[in-house]
Length: 248
Image 1: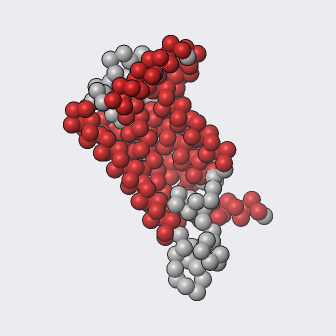
Image 2 (image 1 turned 30 degrees about the vertical axis):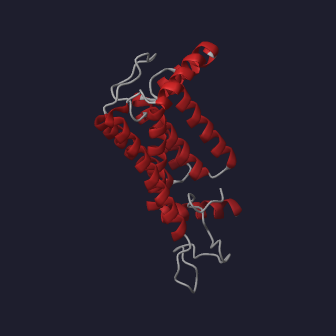
Image 3 (image 1 turned 90 degrees about the vertical axis):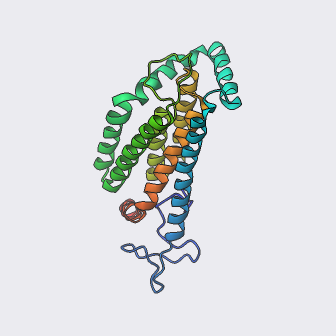
C-alpha cells in the first residue's frame, strides 16, 4: 500500500526522500514529523465517514424510512435478483449466520485478535479490538436513535432497528483493519469483495434497506480511520519492525 492518507507504513519522508528516525518518526535535523500530514488526512477521512453515517441516520429519523426512491429502487432490484439468482440465497444465509450475533461480534474478532498476537502484532491486535468495540457500540447507539423499521418482506430472523447494518459494519471493520495491517494488494481486493458481498446479501434477504448498509459501511470506515490516525505512531513502529525482520 502506498497512500500516506490511510497507511501507518511510512518509514520515510515522501517529499524529500529523507529517512525518518525509527524511534521517533522525526526527520533528522529538522524536528519535523513527516507522518503528520498523513495522520491529519486519515483523521479527516475518518471523521467524514462517521459524519456521513450520522447524516444518513438523521435523514432516516426525519421520516423518509424506506419510502425514498433509492431504497425502493434497490429493493425492487433485489426482488428480481431473488427470482433470477436463487443460487445466491445459501451464501446470503451463511453470511447472515456468520456475520451477526455472538459470532460476528465476539467469536470472529477474538480469533482475529489471537492471530495478530501470535504474529507478534500487539498494536495491530489493539487496533482491531478497539475498532470492533467502538464500531459495534456506535451501531447500537444509532439503531436506538434512528429506530428504523426493517423491510416487511425480511427473509431472515433479526433484531429490531434497521439503521445502520451491523453485519456490514462488522464486515467492513474487519476487512479494512486487516487490509491496512497486511498492506498487500490481494488483501485489499479480498477486503473489498467480502464487504461488498455482505452489503448485497443484507439487501438480498431484505434484512436491510440499501441506505442501512451504506450507513454501516460509512460508520465502519470512519471508525477505523479515526483509530488509525490516533494510533499512527505505534502502528508505524510495529510495521517498521516487521519490515526490518523480513529484510534481515
